[in-house]
Image (cartoon, rainbow, N blue to C red; front, side, top):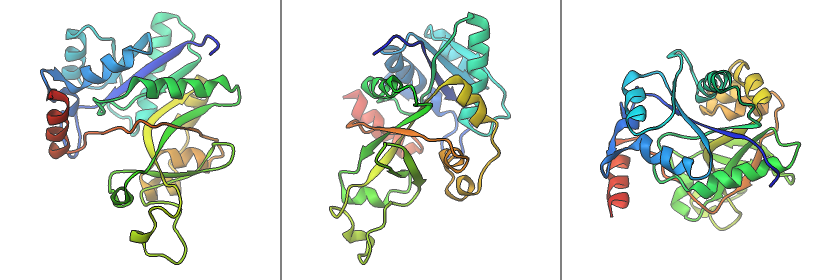
Length: 252
């Protein structure tokens, strides 16, 4: 891979409708945000947590991490990511080729996923990239928390949906599995800085609001999203049950 300068940003909010304060939730003696930060740091030199909460800022500083304070008015992780990028670039006087937006609620994040995302930028035409993984179990097609994706022959996303896509004609949903391959989205993005600035300033779109998926805003506005297929799944923490499950797995 040609040399490129990557900036990893982990947006982290204290407020969450289903699990308040989850970045600071203890998992095996460490806050969740520290688990994520340490895994990202294995493959990216410049990593920053972007937050609007002093409690999170203090915890990140306590374990020696980099953190930037951002506005509490952002309605998306992309806008927080842009503000953090601008602050870091200004303060460090460093030119970054690609900004990677990493979910702060995936403490079992596989560092190789980030490498797979970085490799997408070997193609000069890639401006936005994300990861997808194959659905391996029929019950996953009914997941309420997953986003599904279809893509074209050039590995560009066509559409993201909260329901399994594509539909299989003439069959009930419980018969779909095995009739075609289904892919679900891994919520990690990478952007070239100028594109990040452009998409962060787009107005919310109809399909984004219907599905509750910000990436549809970019597609609706004509911005291609390159997808790479990863074999690594990820587990995000949205509820107390999720948190208890991940504690059992990780503390073993």
